[in-house]
Length: 261
Image (cartoon, rainbow, N blue to C red):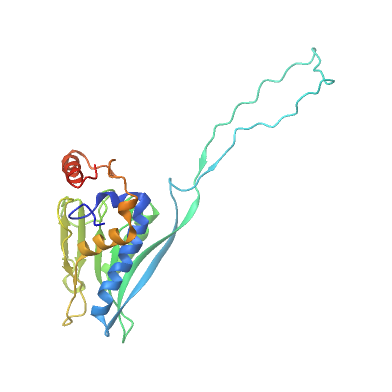
C-alpha cells in the first residue's frame, strides 16, 4: 500500500520506526545509484561508531526493598528495649548507561584510486540534538567540508536543530544540502515542507562525469511499501513529533479522504 502523503510521511519520524526507515533508505539509495555509476565508481555502506549516554537508554533502578528478620512466636520483643526508628525509605533513581551507537552512511568511491568522491548522509535524531551524537556528526561534517569530497546531507526530521548554514536562517520542515567541493563555501540547499514533494537533485561526481538524478521521493514511497509500514502505523493519532496548528487540519483532511481516519 502506498504512503498517503505526497511528500515526506511525518509518521515515519516516530522513533519507533525511524531506525528502520534510516537503514532501508540508505540501502535503497545505494541500490538505485550503483548501476548508474559502474564501472568507474562503487557505492560502499559505511558506519560511524561512537559511545554516548542517552536519557532514553535502558536505566538501572535502585530498589526500595528493606530485608529484615521477623520474630517467631517464641521470640517476643522485651518491652524494656527501645524500638529503633524506621529506616528512611530510599528514593528510586536512574543511572545513565553508556551505549554504543552505529550510524550508517554511504560513500561513492572511485574504483581505480579508492578515493571517496561523495558522502551521502541521512541525519538521525541524535545528530540533531545536543550531545555526543551531534558532536560526532559535526566533526565528520567539518572533515568532509575541508576536503575535496562532495557532501549530500539529507534531513527528513522536523525535530531537533538543523545543521548550521552561515548567514542564512532559512526555516523549513525538511532540507537537502548538496555541497560540491569545487564551489565551497557555497552549497545548494533544497528546503521543503510537509505538503511538498521531496525535490530531486543531481549526485555530484568528478568533473566531466554524467551525474545521476536522485529521486528521493520515489525511494521513500518504495521503502514505505516494502516495509509494510501501512500495517503498523496508527493514523488515528498524531505523529511524533506533533504537527502543530499549521499542518494538523491539512493532515486530518488528507487522511479522512483516504479513509485512514
